[in-house]
Length: 454
Image (cartoon, rainbow, N blue to C red; front, side, top):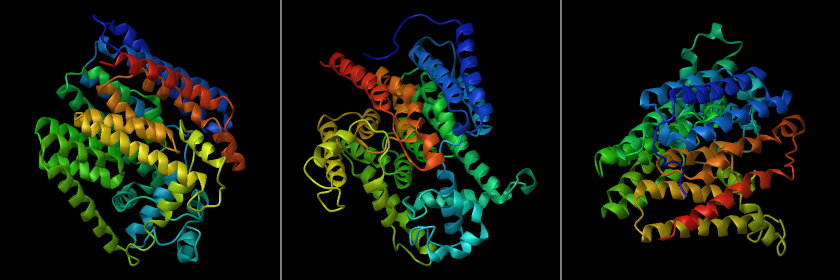
């Protein structure tokens, strides 16, 4: 069963109250500071905001608000999140490190931050080095992603140094500001898609008014929002002009930042009967390889960090743990070809590709197919980071699903073990976390699937 669809309009007072709760809850999160020092109160306030968001999502069809109100609300929430310091992630320090290296013509792929290669860089900014996570692992991001980081790192020097306590604080704020701008571009692109596809502007609040989204991008500076903005922008462009070269170029740029948007090229080629989508994506991806020419080491080590990440990283996930556990009954964790981690990833990747092939065979419309491929990825991935999970939200605005909305409303709970991780370096997932996240999701998803049968 899909959310929404009821007739009639809610009162403006109800929506003012809902947004007031969202804004107040996010304000409390911002005022409390780091999660590690106020886990209980911070989660309490955050989950109140998530509940208000879930109610707003469920009632979006009745909302007496337009695109300007949705965007203005999104902007206010991002301004509050920019003032927050929940410290949900330390990835931004790696963005700064790798961005500075690439801007200086050094390769972040060729060696890890703790290698002797970068002794001078460590000495120049020891505070930055100490804050980088997994200092023994080299860069895992594709070249265009790091080129964007290099651009932000360089642009940070334009900010007045007197406003910040250190050059590192200035760089971190620049990344948060860049992520916020990209996040707001997602809102704009999503509003355009809603208009094209006959959805109310209020549906875009699935992304625009999500406290989780605001804290992941304006708060934690994850640069995924740039890839998503280009992806949705490209899809909106293609919605206005079918098979437009610029639209496919935008999708290709998005895929060159984060690989997932490349799926749209396959579905676009199938829908249009043209190779233009695939050719455009491949050309853009190939062109981004020229970035390697800007560093002395070229492409050396480009797959080292990515291989390490894809093999070892695991966070609270929905399905992977059970597939890996099944293989662990029969094979050892020896890092060989039969390592349960490798086997589980291989099987689940095959399942994801099989799902894509099935959607292609059924000629599922490209935007709908993109949402379904994102959803399948989130179910099967070993690393369900919250900033990965929010990729489903724009597609929920276009095709609402209560199952995903409930999961995203509960997903801040995935950060519960973070306080121990930051204090002790040990990630201890409480017994209740997987049931709290997964059981409502799967129960609702099964119910929806039954209701969607022809």
